[in-house]
Structure formats: structure tokens, C-alpha cells
Length: 437
Image (cartoon, rainbow, N blue to C red; front, side, top):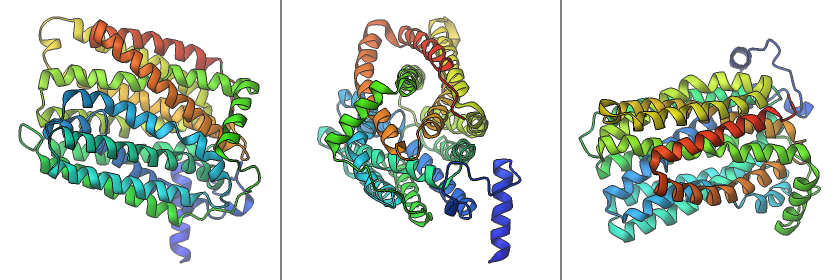
């Protein structure tokens, strides 16, 4: 057993760029020896989660699913708000519950298993669902999947904070994004070889692989060696709400972070509209979906390790650059739509903009995740993450509704110009955040 342990430790040191695998900032001493092993379990778990997220994407895959089963068009507009807000809104209410558990990894396991079950049900609906009833069942399963995602999200960050040292968390998330991007790239390439329209079987296979990804996520989480945490301070939902609101009122840095994170929603909100501009050129053909999945996977594979290293150095600067990149990508997408001729009549210009925004969004996600984990102390990390995610869930519903109205009025290109301004505001706000590394 010694040789594999030595090999694992050396690989861990190579991936993190450090020569001392016992650098254990901000984690218990007893977790130090287990850090290389836990690092790779986190890595594989995150790979399964990210792959499953891409292959069940509410921005790309699920709209195709609703189209194939003949669901009403208005249901497509509910996919992204349900996917995002359903995962974020309940988190504050389960933070106290998680705090009462000395081993938080089992909450993560439960969330991963429920997501796997939900994805398997979606695969079944791809084969058997039809019409409004099938579409309604898809939305109902998506609600359950999103709530399970919320459980996993808060527990994952809490377990990471207990098992992976500071200045290695961003690197971990970066490598997981890179590997997942490569696998997603292969999946998109296979899709491009299918027929001219997505069939029920192809979508069922995609969603089946997503179910396997979340099953792997849950299995790896169960094998992580987590030191027992303090259970003092665990509270019921209402106490968590009151404490969260006091933190928001009294902690200026936390309040400022949430303002920056709210403005950075522009990177997520822009992606469906860039995809919509591309889909208008390719129709419902499976090749168009494959192209968007390929560029998404390639962009994530290339971008995430770079963002991860930069987030460990300064997550504040990564958030700032994410705002600037969002503004540039949105303006470029709007410019392509406004240009006459071939530029606006092919899916490829929009695919390139989509790739740019995927790169930017990867930075936004890594920057704000690393920032909040490093900013919060061990005793309040779960509550900080839960409160921030709950606030973002509310804002996603409100801002998402407003963006939908603007899109109806201004069109997709005009909306992208407005989101560019939001990205500039995010960059200015993030630049004024205090450093936490």
C-alpha cells in the first residue's frame, strides 16, 4: 500500500504545484494526512457532478427534450429559473440542519443520490413522455433535482472546507472543471454524428450518463475521510434566517460580496440568449446542439485550471475579470446579431461567443466559490454559503423575470447590450472587495 500512497502524494503535489503535501492551512491537523486521498475523491466527485450538470443542462439539453416530446412552448421558459432558483432558495433553511451533523458528507451523499434518481426519471420521460403531461412531469422532476442540488451544494463546500487546505481549493475546482470539460467535449462530438434532429433515444442516453455522473459523485462523497465537526450552533430554519439577516446587516464585506455576486448573474443570464441566437440559425437540429455542447466542453476544459490557480492567488481579481469578460462577450454577441449578411446567418459566430461566455462564467463561479469559502470562518462557512445562495436564488427569480421582459421588448441582441452594462458594474464592485487569500 505504501507505493500507491507515495504515488498519490506525488501526483497531488504535481497537480497543486506544491512540494509539501502537508500544507494544511485552515483545516484540522488530523485531516492533513488524508488530504491527498481526499483531494482525488473530491476531484472525481466534482467530475461526475460537472459532467451530469452539462448533460442535463437547462440551457441546452432540456429545451431539446421538451421539443422532442411535444411539450407546450411556454414550459421552456421555466427551465432555467427552476434549475437555478430551486437549487439556491432552500439552502438557508437546511444550513442549521447540516450544522447539527458532525459528518456533513452524508448530506452530500443524499443530494447526489437524489439527483441521480431524478436524472434517471428524466431519461425515462425522454422515451415515454409526450405532450403537456410529459412536459409537466419534466418540470416536476426538475424541481426535485434542483432541490437535491441545493443539498449537495452547501454540504460539498462545508466538507471541502474541512478536508482541503486554503490555496488548494481553487486548484481542485479548476482541475475538476478541466477534466469534465474534456468529457463533455467528447459527448458533444458524438452528438454531432447523430441525425439531423435529436431523437428520444439520444436524449435518454445523455440523461442516463448524467444519472451515472451523480451516482459517482455520491459514491466518492461517501468515501471521503472527514473529521468530526462541532455541532454547537445548529439551529432551526427560522433561527438560521434571523442569524443570516443579522450577518447580512453587520458584516459589510459579506454584504459587498453578495452585491458583486448579484451583478455577476449577468454571465449566467446571457448564455441562454446567445444559445437562442445560434439556435435560430440551426433550428432544432441535433448538430446545432452538438456544436454548442462541444464549444462549452472545450471552453471549460481550457479555462478552469487557469481560473483555479488565479482564484487561489486572488479570487477578488477573478471576479473582477469575470465581470469584464461578461461585458465583452455580451457586446460581441449583440454586434454579431446586428451585423448584416453571413455573420448573422450562421450558428458559428454565436458558438464562439457562447464559448467565450462559458470561459467567463467558469471564472465567475470559481472566483465567487473560492472567495466565500476563504472569507468565512470554519464555524460559519455553511451559513455564509447558504445565505448567499438563498439571496442569489431570490435575485435569480426577480432578475430573470425582468430580463425576460426586456428580451421580449428589446430582443436578444438588445438584452445582451443591457447585460454588458451589468457586467461592467460587477467588475467595478468586485474590484472594491477586500482580499481574503
